[in-house]
Image 1 (cartoon, rainbow, N blue to C red):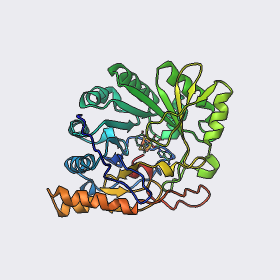
Image 2: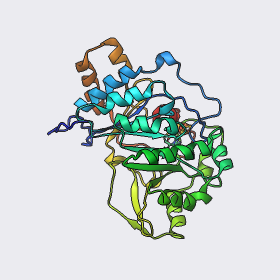
Image 3: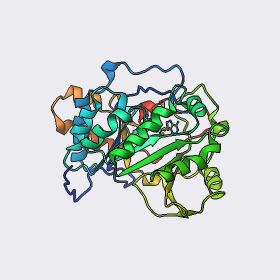
Image 4: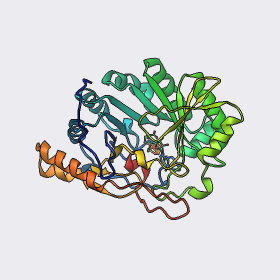
Length: 336
Ligand code: SAM
Ligand code: SF4
């Protein structure tokens, strides 16, 4: 990754927020079926409707030429998409890109951690909601905890600059594991972020309002065991960070309900079908697949469509756990 200095940001929305980060969902498929993310009966996007890896590269390059500095590859489970390492290699050599990162459930890392590192990925996020085999299966429906733990060990061995764990905490499912998860991260020199469940898509498993466990409750639980020092650190995302005084571990809280973060939003999302979503919690979008398929090889049309999209980036989300979801897209389509 070489660096090009953009003196003037190009992508600026109506609220003067600079967009310099894109999250790309490369597939909506996954080898897990986490209860907060998917229904147990999911309809996946037909393969012909998915962006090809070449189309994803073209769109990613256009974004970097418009000043985007960070790309996160996500899904679904990004590492189950065929030939995915080729995409990482292509993106890893894009001029102007400072950071190529990914979010994974960890199931493929024994095999793919080294190729990811070799392609230029420096930091990875791995989702881990439980350290108990049965609870892990209950939350992921089909996941194998030991496979994920082995993947985390491989990721540590290949030497990424940073590994961060992500945990979604649900009341009466895994809220008793908060301290164990922090200890697990601390002992391995990893950071951890706790995410409040968001109402994306209809899920059959539980009532989201009943399972809600707030960041403030998680923080209160941690303070029974550790001293938490607030930090002003930011990774350019919605996490609020604290440091555990005893271990130096960084703990983040992503709190879409209790602490809205929209005023500093710097990101957009590309779905696996090529829909550019301007907000996680709203439906404002532009069909970039249509643009590139109508004008193959015409990067200017693509870039103009991206620039124009800034006009419809909404001010923020208005998630409400007590109502039926107004967003019918599941997180695996959106790209978390
Ligand atoms: N499969 C990968 C994984 O699980 O890390 C990447 C995609 S997943 C959609 C990205 C992140 O979104 C994960 O950390 C997951 O826990 C989180 N997530 C999924 N559905 C969510 C929801 N409804 N609310 C909050 N976080 C969610
Ligand atoms: Fe798959 Fe990630 Fe969704 Fe779990 S959170 S079902 S691992 S995409």
